[in-house]
Length: 207
Image (cartoon, rainbow, N blue to C red; front, side, top):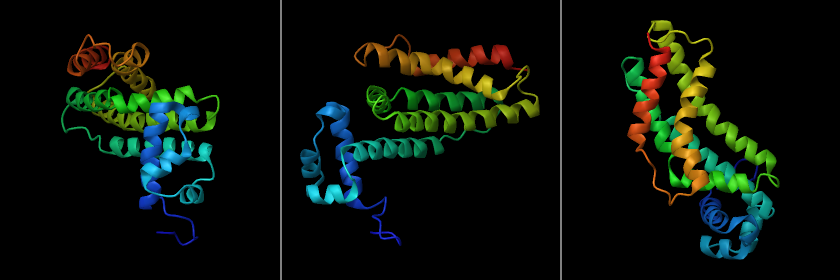
């Protein structure tokens, strides 16, 4: 349904169908290999309709990445720490973050953005910053709360501590599979990674 300005709504079913099939094409074939005509055909629209919604292939690619980032934001918004002490809440956050960063689809989008970064630098930067900032804000809030309650000590800057915790999760569940390939079997489960990360973090900052 068009908006008040006459522009197509971001929730227009045709637009969403195009984005869905364009995402599949870009992930599987890369930017250079993906073609507009098959994307339009799979989405059940004409190429004229696709070009009416997206000016060209580069605009469609940017829209696909922005749409994926918005989807990730909705997933992030669902991360709510359980009530409890610092260890309980941090474990809840860490489990959700490990599940998100360890998801194969998330890695496929990151790979696509990284591969096309020289051509779409602004889109790539926007994508990376959105994800880490939103998850980071949730974690920083948890750290500040327990710092005020006395459950966490020796935290000079909550943002630094948050970066440390997230980094300890990212390396084994995201970066290692990103580099070695998803076919390489992980040495530890996400639960084992989270347990080790929280033990390490609490040993440094716990009261």
